[in-house]
Image (cartoon, rainbow, N blue to C red):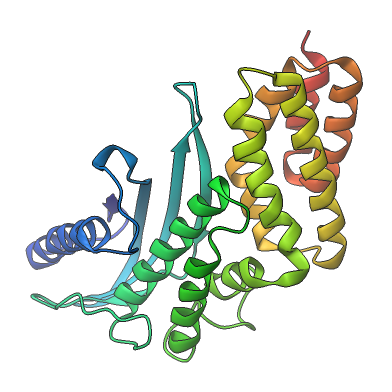
Length: 275
């Protein structure tokens, strides 16, 4: 967890407040019980939150952005795969000295705790989806509830302001017409990556089918933030997955990847240029 305030001029009081905030965020995310399931310490989800302070209009008032990332290990390997890589450009909040970190998914107390709770449930949902088909549904429903409660409070929670915000992220994750993307998340991670060392070519074929279904879903929602977020997390991984594929699979993969992810289209050419 990191708070970057290098682009703003800080007073001594600001520095103290941000240090206190960082400690409270870490305690909130790590020590709160987010699910009734029991995990060993080594099974806890790895996540990172990088907050960048853009301005401080008044003491304790922060305009910021945030990058939220989470990952999980791949079975029978030392590799960790990124599950979520999301950039929140409206991570604005007020935090005062000794402010409690009150939170309830059904009540809006503070934007900072609503945003952190929202992402905690999104991270949980993504992780559960990667281990069981649609396993993250209960967590995504909680995140949607937080978004609904907060929608009239601050930027980032409403439909009309952007296609790339918290509203649309959780809308996509609960949208039945994008359900194949979430189903593909399970196939990609549990059936393909987790068995990749045993049967890499089958894993590549499974992932290709996931990409095909994702392309079909994209016809319904061409600006889907869920699909965009997938490729923010997976571009380099997909290149490495298909670099050693058979020539026919390489060709198919490059064709569909360039169609699904135009901003990174030229990067995927690496797949067919490798031997």
